[in-house]
Image: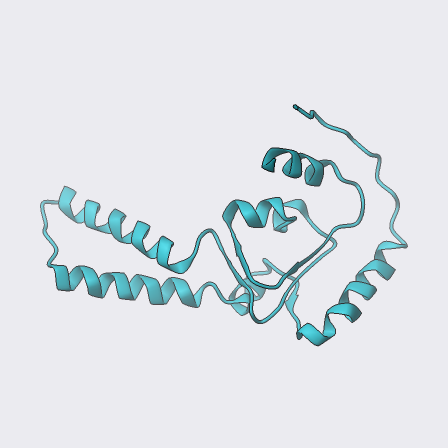
Length: 143
């Protein structure tokens, strides 16, 4: 159950480390200890994609909004223009899925070579060993 997972993550006091290796979108990113949970470190592999939703889904949604806006202004859009606009939005959004884009905005602490994963997690655990232990708070668990 997703709500229980989110509750457990929110109330957990153990050091949290996040490694993004593939797609990390929206609520999935949140539930799996994304930036909102303030993990001790959050790294991404070069294969990661980080966004609110996939490029194709986002582009279709943004296109619908733009077309609706044009229609509200009394303008029409030709099918060719719509396809061109969809491609433009998709390309722009896909560029923003990159883990390097996420790192440049400090959404992740860095992009690491998969071969460096063990070393980075080990360094994180070593650093976490010296931090004070937080008080555990159960929160509200509904079954």
